[in-house]
Length: 347
Ligand code: AMP
Ligand code: MG
Image 1 (tube, helix red, strand yellow):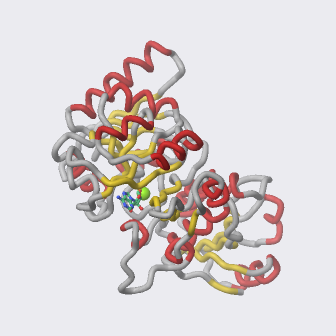
Image 2 (tube, rainbow, N blue to C red; image 1 turned 45 degrees about the horizontal axis):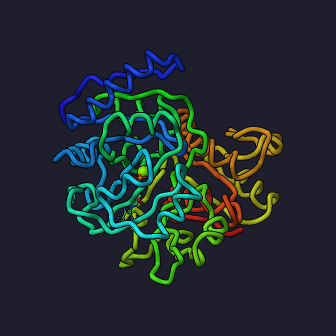
């Protein structure tokens, strides 16, 4: 792949300067170029969903398998009418959760190039709440197909520097809008014929929250268990190893004392652990910590940065205790199972 000059531009809060940056970025998108931008979940790598061949460039820049479809981003939920077949449940969900970290799978219309959806006859729709993302999509005047702005398989980017580390020289522009608030990707759901929904990827919009709006949210096995050989997943992304640093990630269930013994007894010198600040003193190896607070929101916010930090420090193995699967912890659980390639340890 030829190297291109990737411009890194910062949104500063100065209306005039920011407006000029967004107009320029929108123009790049309209002409079929690639722009990485912040969202409330992770940084996205945007391309026009209408420009022929733009999606192909996204797959190339990321090194992503072309059967793994892209999410199409809109600045208002109603814009989905242009390219998807909506329904009353979509609008009910939109009223409650959009703009926000929810992606809904709908039947697609022909205007969307098959390369955007990996050849599927459905399309994933999301309306981000991040103001920069929404302003960019509105300025582009077209839906924006955007996967996470990382090299395929590596931890998703939650800072502009992560995007530059992975994609500098491969894309036209990176808009730096600071750290992503949530830090893990959106909840992806399929709508079921009975008025319920199926969670294909857990995120900040939880099953409990969806239960209140749909006739029940179900979580298929593939979300919490490693994919088995021969399985045909409902969402192509479920079958790939994902979110992984070069270091081996070892999630473990069980109580804290057993976990500490396991980590301490590993003879690997370049090992580390992701843990709360409050238990730092109980490990003799490198401790990567999200801070004092030990909750789902804190861990989700910092997880990918910590996994990238493990690589920067040259660690070969990183241990982390698996959380339970309720509420916002399900997203964390799912990412850790994927990042480890399914190698979880039961203590
Ligand atoms: P990413 O682009 O990295 O956020 O990943 C997008 C996720 O959405 C992947 O797991 C895809 O498999 C999933 N996805 C996108 N479009 C569809 C679709 N039409 N049907 C099912 N899953 C989808
Ligand atoms: Mg991704």
